[in-house]
Length: 475
Picture 1 (cartoon, rainbow, N blue to C red):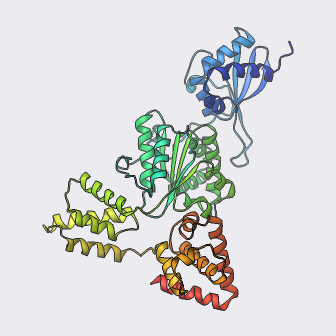
Picture 2 (picture 1 turned 90 degrees about the vertical axis):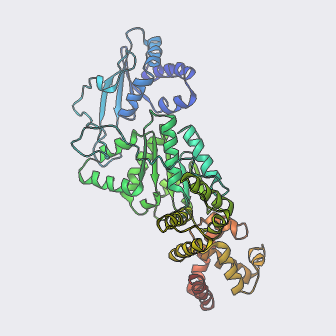
Picture 3 (picture 1 turned 60 degrees about the vertical axis):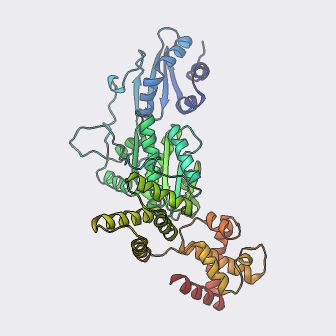
C-alpha cells in the first residue's frame, strides 16, 4: 500500500480543511505533526495536553470521519503529547493517549497509559489544600465601557477595546497594548474589555492580573519547584489581561516565562491585552523578542482628555452618583484639572463630600479651594506646550519658529532641547512628543535626546542651556 503517516494525515487534513473555519484550521490543525502509522492506528503529535483536550472536545467527530475514509472502519487515532523543552533542563516528555473515537469526552475519562503522568493543574490563585479549579477573573465590574467616556484622547484605544471584546482572539488587535500616563484610564479600559467578554462569552476563561502579581507568582512557583504548573495554568486562559507590563523591565526570568505563555496563547488564537505607562519603543530593559511581540497587534495611546471630554466625565460621574451641580462649577473644575481623569474625579468627590459633611452649599469659592488643594498636592506635570514656550522664550524666538522645518543650527538645537525636556518631564510617548513639536516622528525625538546628551557632555555652553532650562521647568 505504501502509505505513510504523513500521506494519510495530509489526506485527512484536506477533508478537514474543507469542513471547518480557516481560522480554526490554522489554530488547531496546522501545529499537528503526523508521527507514526502502525496498521490502522495513526499517531499524531500535539503541542500540549490542553491542545489534545480541545481536539477531543470539539473535533473528534470530524477526525473520526476523516480517518475512517482513509484507514477503514477500524481506524484508530493516538495523540502524542510532546511538551517543548523550554522550561529548564528537564527532558521533553511525551504521553500517548488513544483518541476516544466516540464523540466528545472530557480528558479525564481517558486512561493515560504512562509512567510520567503530568501533575494535576495547579491554579496560582487558589490557596493550597482547597480544591477549587474555577478561575476567578479578578475583574472589577464597576470598570465598564458604559462609564468609560469616549473623547478624542481615547477614541482609538476604546474602539479597539470594544472590537476585542466582541471577538476575543479574532481581530488583528492581538495583543492589544494600551499605554499612557497615570490616571488616564488604562486599568479601567483593561477591566472593561474583560467584563464585556465575560458578559458575551460566559464560557471563556478571562483573567486580569497586574504584572507585579504575575512576577510574584512566578517567583513563588520557582521556589516551590512547580514552574511547569505555573506555565500550564496560564496556557489555559482564553483572555489574559496584564496590567502595567512595564513592571517586567529587568526581570529576565519572568520575561522568559511570559514569552512562552504569550506565544502559546497567541498561536492558539487566545486574546492578550496589556497595559503600560509607555509605548513599546520607549520601554527599557525589556527583551527585544518580547517587544517585537508587543508590536504584533495594536498599540493604542490614551492621552490627557480635552476640555469637552473632562466636562463629560464630570457630568457622567455626578449623574451616576445622583448629584446635581451648577455648570459653572463643573466648568471651573474641568478647566483647572487637566492632567488626568483620576484627579478630576477625585476633586469632584471631594466637593460632594465637603458639601454633604459640612452641610455647605457647593459654591464656586468651595470649588476653588478644593481645586487649589488638588493642584498643589499634585506634582505638576508640565505640558509639552509649556515646555515649547519656555524653550522658545529662553532662545528669544516664537513657538512657530521652533516647530518650523528650518535647519538653522540654533533653531534645530532649541527644538532638540524641547524634545529632550518633553521626554524628561512628561510621560508622553516619543511619537506623541514628535507630533506635538513640529510633526516629527519618534526617531527624530530619539535622535534629539541622544544629541542633547552628547552635547551636554562635550560643549560647556550647551550644558549651561540644559541647566538653565532644567531650573525653569522644575519650578
